[in-house]
Image 1 (cartoon, rainbow, N blue to C red):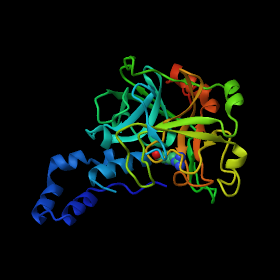
Image 2 (image 1 turned 180 degrees about the vertical axis):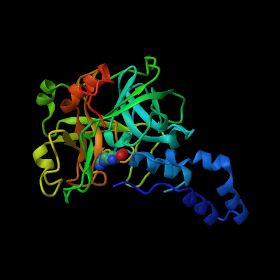
Image 3 (image 1 turned 45 degrees about the vertical axis):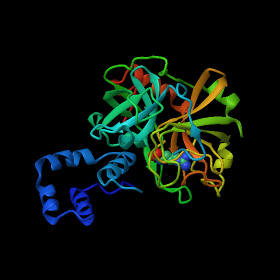
Image 4 (image 1 turned 30 degrees about the horizontal axis):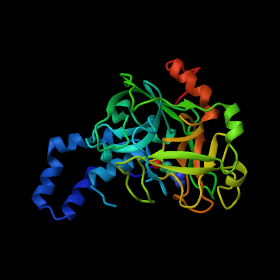
Length: 320
Ligand code: ARG
């Protein structure tokens, strides 16, 4: 389900409806600089990208649910993927990610679908999108070969599967006290901790309510792990949850729009954190039985490692 493309006419008519002079509206439509800014190829891309672009262009008024601000200097791997042509970080943020190597960010497939590397800027090392941070242009985007939208489940609705992507930046980020990469969970550790009610942490710059816009300050929320069996019950997602997904959350504790691509983490020991999931999808946010669904990192570890070491080898790193 691809949202409508933002059209130049759409923007101009909103400006006109807001009371701008007809002359001004007409001029806007004809100004070359303006139409350059809105060149059609910039207005294609993933759903989160287009939604963010639309919000920016229309100045539409319309976060993590039930979370709290993170302490500065924690969540040092949290990344923000931003629209390259939107200046302010808060306006430009469309998805989260996690830094897994100095030049690689792990995110969701549905965040990067249909985007070109020039569409995106990667930002790390801050818990406040309003503050300056390390920003990089993108060298390559790799979306999992089997990433797709499953439309067959009527209870769950259309939702992503194999929802994983990698973003490589041109120049590696400089590691410092505010910035650290996160390691990915392996199946052995996952087996011991993926137990009902085990607390995990989701973080992001996303909306704090359904239909809300992203926030400047990074939030995190502790969410209990939910078994696949529970998550697959008819009142939840009725068998839409595959082995490539895990569920977590409870009423009023969830990730939400704009958090996609960001990490679900687990702290086996103090000062030691691993990533267990990638924020993926869910029916609304923080609603009973409608848990947050995360891409199961352990299921994609081999693909991730192969793509980081052989990004040009299509046999080792199959991608869209
Ligand atoms: N798909 C959303 C995004 O693009 C994330 C939704 C997560 N939803 C949830 N209820 N946990 O930002």
